Length: 194
Image (cartoon, rainbow, N blue to C red; front, side, top):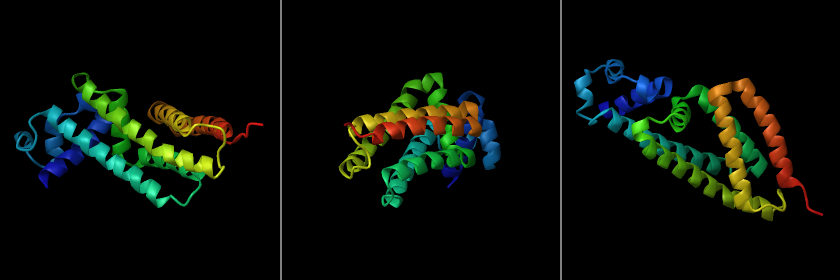
């Protein structure tokens, strides 16, 4: 129970202050324990961070899976636009996405390789998971003349760009970039070659 609470508070601190700005003493204080008690559960700040990272990516993958299962009845267009809007809402309301974006753009130097390995693994899973949805949309003629793999990769690029806007630009810039990028992306998927 205490280990989970430590991770939850640590997630919030890492999301707000980054790795370098996060203090184990402050985490302990917010949990209601003394700093040495953290070491009963985690060997070091790095160990705690890596546990949080692993938990967050597992939880995020579960969220993605649940999202697509719940919205499987929707068209590809509606699934993808709802996914993007859900990410925006989750960024504003929860620390998980703030943490993921912060550490993917600003990983702790000593843990950079492990962070980027996890992030790339997650994005590859998401990209590969979208391919069958793109293929289905191609079969039902919701989209035309594009390879499902390319459509998936292009969507991930849009998502990456929108994540940058969430992190640096804020909600208004996010909406403006979404409107422009989505319009062009979807037109590219739905124009029939003559």
